[in-house]
Image 1: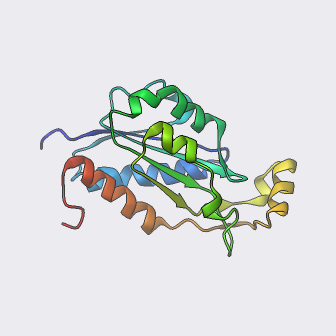
Image 2: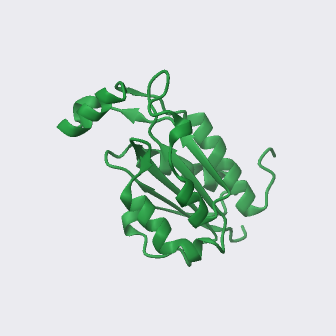
Amino acid sequence: MSAGPSVLVAWSGRHGRTAEIARCVADAVRAGSGDTARVDVRPATEVTDVAEYDGVVLGSAVYLGHWTPQARDLVRRCAIELWSRPVWLFSSGPVGDPPRPDPDLVDVDLELALSKAREHRVFPGRLDVARLGRVERLLTRLVRARSGDARDWPAVRAWGTAIGAELAGRDATA
């Protein structure tokens, strides 16, 4: 088996739901590469640089339409290194029907520009209002978000598989 690409899948979130999506993306990247990719999954706060990676996937939970400060900070700290490798971004968070917050209102324009990302995907999230703090519960009421798991695992896997195939120079449909 030949050595494949090295890939970082980093995430930021407060309640572990975005980490679950990041792990699913990582598994799919590995599978999409034909199991040749070395994939590291790490919290954004533990990433000091991305120099050792051939590709980067970065995801953040979305709170009131914005990425976490930790995810935004990673993009700012590593922007120049990100320019020289393929980058994909994902956001996790909209829940409910209709989704709240509206996926079209997720503000990642600066992160897209700074990272020169190839793509940004918004994946529905999971919300357990009972596990939130008082302020977070109040905010979920304001945006009329309800508890539930809206994550679309097949869509997450398909996206990760396509990234892995692209990085390994494989046909994702094969």
